[in-house]
Amino acid sequence: MRTKSVSINEYIIADPNICHGKPTFKGTRIMVWQILEMLASGENFKEILENYPSLTEKHIKAALNLASEKIGKEKYVSFIQTA
Image (cartoon, rainbow, N blue to C red; front, side, top):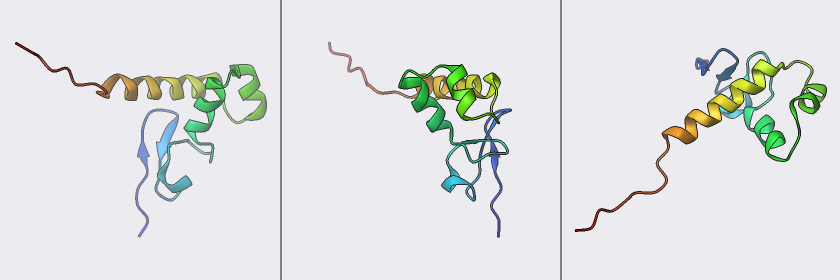
């Protein structure tokens, strides 16, 4: 039985049958983490789009928004209140 894909946003999906369920850009096997890693290593939008012509700036911005949402919702440090 094929498991359904989940639409994360307009440009990104997660499908257990594509790239082991890692978020990818719709209609591709390009994983979101790959694009985020390229940005983190200093590549700019133009360089990424030259390497991945099936993507647009909107795809890259969707990846950045997803990363921002995930980081914004995570709690990394618990504060302990002392008397």
